[in-house]
Image 1 (cartoon, helix red, strand yellow):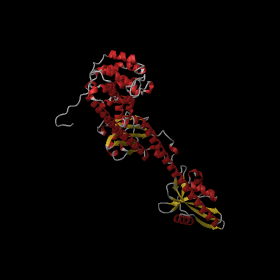
Image 2 (tube, rainbow, N blue to C red):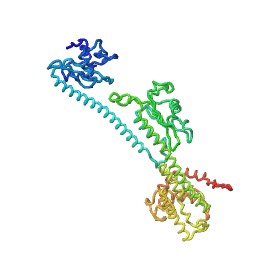
Image 3 (tube, rainbow, N blue to C red):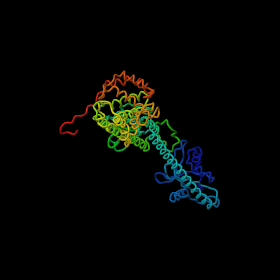
Image 4 (tube, one colour):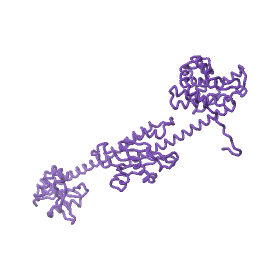
Length: 535
């Protein structure tokens, strides 16, 4: 039996913590000393030694023919080889793969035990080794799937948070308002130092987009952000642009402070609104050493790019939907104005009355603390409050003398007529209470339903005041408009009987604004059509 080189054994012992971990496992299993061997560049088998830093090197001198034969047998079969020296001991060679994936052989020149028993132990050890390697692979795969699951849950949480910020019922919730609630969540989800929204001028070139909103702990100059969109914008229109480790690339000199970034466009219906840029992973977040892939925590990947693209798509779609909503509302306002114009065309003396009432109503609504949307609705209701007069005959509307009971009964039908006209328009359901009840009185003597006090909806009580004031101060076929002072006195005298006393107080609190509007009001000019033209 060949005597092992004592210097090799000493090197293995001194550097035990740097040796291949399989050696220690084999030595505990077989109670023998194992060393590693592998082929050199010339195809000769040599011993492997470890220095104090764990580095491998090949020792001078060849293995004995018997050991070489064991190595060759293991290398060809990838299975342990047992060579008998006697009935109670044998030479054992076991295949090993190092961290770099290279084939090596663990050799024990003398192992106590019968050859048959050692061969069975070696087979069991190989099975256990394979199971351990497979378990380690499963551990890595499980860690990968766990990270994927966490990414998916983060994305789901992020998307749910975005949905909570979406409010299509509020036209004031524009793209910037949504971005202010969304980008902080995005910046945290992708663990970035900075996220920037760049907005293009209305209908303008997206390449002229300017930084509009910044989120994150690190600020970057506009020039740096704009250079990213300028240099990579064309590519980003095809797919998200992800750049990592710029310090190793030429782009770093043009983008000071930028290590990595993602750039995506905001596009809806082939119309680009701007850009979304996320810059630099925030390396202070999380324990990177615990991750099986620590490098992935220092760069942006497909997960972060997907989140950015999704956010950009949601923002752009929301902006497009808001534009459609505004167009829809503008169309509704135009239709309402057409109805009011039709009413004005019936009676020159009441021309402009509905619009003034609408403006007064909005001022009074603001005075009592209505929000922007409620003020918009009370304005629209004011425009429509007399729409039922379309069903009243011209003779009654334009009569200069006192109305008969029958004629007054016809006038009193206009709230119900207005309600019937608007009833089937779902977009104008909010206007029905004001249209129907603006002639009710708080003492219960009004019409059409003789409601009293708080039974009358707020819209009806509010419009009753501003409608009466404009009617008293405007000219009619049968009288001139009365001075504002007289109209004020009538309103004060009727507070608590005909009109809501608290609203009368608020009316006079806003009276200066109302009078300013009344004195500056000018009728809308009807368009004049040119002969042969319909535009």
